[in-house]
Image (tube, rainbow, N blue to C red; front, side, top):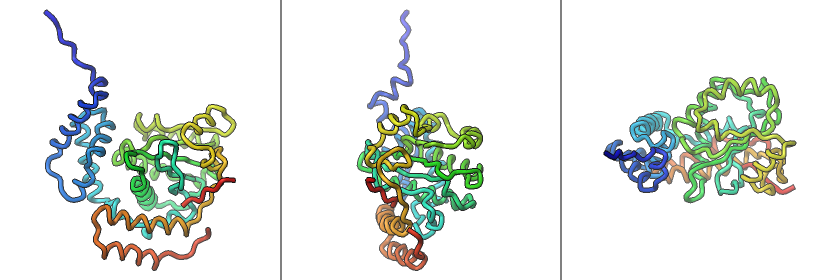
Length: 295
């Protein structure tokens, strides 16, 4: 009598035909979709949720259904710059005007510039920039890279644990497989206590994508340069470019992207006009996207 050995799950998930079959199975399990939910649930989207749940269709379905409910309530695609611009005055999170070596969108985070405490506003601002980063992904690209600069960080500027937890939960639960790599650059020793508290909110997949980098360590420099062109990389991260945040210029770019967002999600022309009018009415001049120039 011969026993037929089952194919390991890991081998199945690496088989393109098996992946495609899982995507079809998940789509059938979700049932009929309409409107923005249908627009959101592309094959690429389904594949990301399957990857996040190790290609388990039932678990991916549950996760995706939770995201659909969240998006219907939170409406991330309807957040506009004029609603969150006050959170970005210091440049604590911005989209860089360069990409990594794989062509991924880069978000630069500077927790030392954190000046606001409202959890809801901080989460909305992060979600806005996640959606904006996705909007600006190159064709065929699904992920983005994060650069986190700890210059000026201290316990007084630290993001509250609750805010960090809520931001992490949103990223992991509703933007699976969107993060390629996150570099925590030159964090001070005192950050270790904060990290020990926050790391427990990270799932294993996200945790593996977080890399600590230090300016005087050769391995850190080599790892950074494997992801970024040193000519584009700001000096704050060991590169040769300079980093300056111009809030007024960044606001202009975000307003332009708001129009693209409205068009992508099917907002009508009247809504797009209102976006621009609201922004012009509410935006006040602020001291001077991230301007990256070679030094």
